[in-house]
Length: 69
Image 1: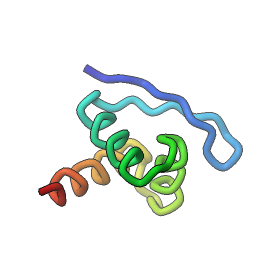
Image 2 (image 1 turned 120 degrees about the vertical axis):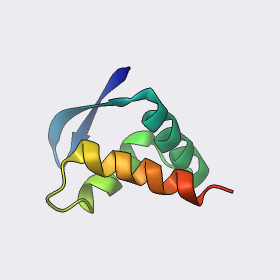
Image 3 (image 1 turned 60 degrees about the vertical axis):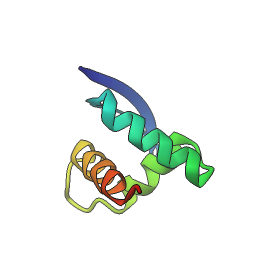
Image 4 (image 1 turned 90 degrees about the vertical axis):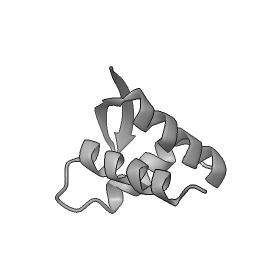
């Protein structure tokens, strides 16, 4: 099931819909790094290039999951 979250990125409001499992991983990484979820999403947004934000977030979560012990 998709879960939608809204953020302000580069001064613009945007919403991203991802499966809750992806949000869980992304939120866990944010907690581990001691940053807000919005700050981590902004970091991912800044480095995504031309890739859609939802895709960049899913790939980030996938990489984080693979790196987990």
